[in-house]
Length: 232
Ligand SMILES: *[C@@H]1O[C@H](CO)[C@@H](O)[C@H](O)[C@H]1NC(C)=O
Ligand SMILES: *[C@@H]1O[C@H](CO)[C@@H](O)[C@H](O)[C@H]1NC(C)=O
Ligand SMILES: *[C@@H]1O[C@H](CO)[C@@H](O)[C@H](O)[C@H]1NC(C)=O
Ligand SMILES: *[C@@H]1O[C@H](CO)[C@@H](O)[C@H](O)[C@H]1NC(C)=O
Ligand SMILES: *[C@@H]1O[C@H](CO)[C@@H](O)[C@H](O)[C@H]1NC(C)=O
Ligand SMILES: *[C@@H]1O[C@H](CO)[C@@H](O)[C@H](O)[C@H]1NC(C)=O
Ligand SMILES: *[C@@H]1O[C@H](CO)[C@@H](O)[C@H](O)[C@H]1NC(C)=O
Ligand SMILES: CC(=O)N[C@H]1CO[C@H](CO)[C@@H](O)[C@@H]1O
Image (cartoon, rainbow, N blue to C red; front, side):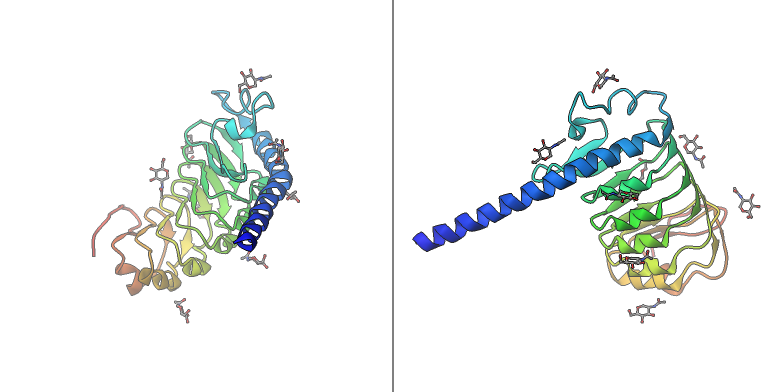
């Protein structure tokens, strides 16, 4: 019994030591990364970041930020509909505990930084209704926890990365209203046997046939000129 308590004691000690080290190194990096994100905002008409993201309060209490209780690390970045104009800093990838990014309904322009692919815990990425340009970063395939990716209503070009077929936890992919070209990759059909439910790619410059595998998805909208959802 005594030994059991000793083991438990050692385990608890090691766990708290782990929490402290993760925190001590990580929270400094998180704060810096958030300040870098703020630096890339050129216009913030409501003063959300400019007048509240400062050291008078802890960064975990800044608007749009959620931290984990255990590690005090940033887990969610939710800046939706703040009318922010600017680019997405590659420093976002230093927020290594991020699970949720929602920057939708803003004026984010420029490319989606390929460094986002370093976010191993990322589950939801929503950049809908912005002005992001360039290609969809293939590096996103390294975010193996991704459940939803919403890049609809941007100015993205290039192809749908066929590597997306390996995102086995993906449930939703929305890329409608962009300027994407090429085929809908058949590799996406490999997802239909997993949890993949929603695929929307309307209003692009996509060509070719709709792969059979994708047609079997529950909700699937792919027409060029009309967005339709239909159950199969
Ligand atoms: C970061 O974590 C360390 C260790 O837990 C703590 O002493 C420090 O106050 C924290 N700093 C911030 C800015 O949260
Ligand atoms: C810092 O942020 C607080 C709210 O979080 C705000 O009241 C204060 O005016 C800000 N200070 C500066 C110098 O912007
Ligand atoms: C933070 O991110 C930047 C840009 O991706 C990178 O150059 C830098 O090395 C990173 N720093 C840390 C401490 O992770
Ligand atoms: C995924 O991560 C690995 C290891 O960090 C890296 O070598 C590879 O280039 C990344 N893949 C993409 C498509 O960025
Ligand atoms: C992305 O955000 C928009 C606006 O808040 C919302 O309507 C949409 O459903 C979100 N996408 C996903 C996949 O959750
Ligand atoms: C889409 O790309 C084509 C060819 O590159 C270009 O002519 C067209 O203006 C673009 N459309 C939009 C909405 O950006
Ligand atoms: C689907 O997955 C299988 C097994 O991983 C692979 O051999 C096949 O090439 C994939 N199909 C497509 C169209 O990518
Ligand atoms: C493609 C595009 O410009 N989308 C929108 C990005 O967000 C701003 C602000 O909400 C809108 O004005 C843009 O139309």
